[in-house]
Length: 448
Image (cartoon, rainbow, N blue to C red; front, top):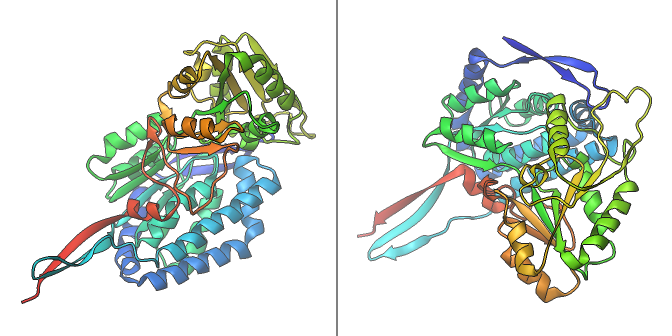
């Protein structure tokens, strides 16, 4: 069995040791889920709903434990960790209710002398592989609809953040039943083994390289992918006064380690100097430590630093780091504004996934749209301007799955979230996500 050291992102010190699931552990996890799947699927939607609500109650009852576990792996502040745990509980509560709605698309006498209806059936066993940036919340996004739809789930948390997954699985055993949700901690090889195991579908949230590897291994099985954002924020000359503070706040929340966070600010050339100056002022007002947390792990630090050092940005505005005693060895990075850089700059084409914004400019709105749509990722974007018509026209022209106008990174369980092109395919959140984990069966009966 392979072992890896887990570090505290705030201090850089080893906090625990993880035993990574190998072939035997993967087989056991999948077998447990496979054994539980028929019983879970046979329950009525009402009964599954009640059991999911019991799991939510356990999460809220043990809120402090979940917050502590979330902080251990992510280095988030207690307030941010608490908000994530409560948001995760809300997602599960939403799906406990959503599954009781009738989603049947067709029923009745649609053929002469025949009665037809559609059954929505679970896929079976779902492998849910989730990242380290929001360990519990990204799990809830996948688990909520998968469990509500009647599937058993094997949850593979990220290597650096297994804590909340293990805690959740222990509570799920009592609330949902043994084997309905199984946690499988481990490294990337554990994830590869899980994708290659006898699961019926794979839900993966992570990097584009990881997603391509999942597709290659999954073959013809159902796959849902969310592969990152590198999101554009289009700032028009008539943008509201709070635009620049809001963008900096969104890009430094969770140290910029959010797939849908703003990453690339794009404006008109006539407005470039003002945009850079106001973003730089907003960034100087935010400090790593009191205002946002560290990067998650040494690999992410190395990746972020490599992109920044290879950038040809001519203007780089840097915030400050002000951490507490004993935390100076953590994975802290100041907020950055990078401007005057070419369209093919590594900081533009590669998702930095850190507290940084690039700033680009075009001569006209067509050029702005072209820059916004020029990268492989197409998850989300935002438009900032007070004139309704131009803002909504730009929102329509941006090729991505979610667009905000005069806000960014605001989501709720009722609204769908999903990417296009290099950001993957499939839907998280909303009732639409239920169909990611179901398959329709048409039944037609002769009446005479």
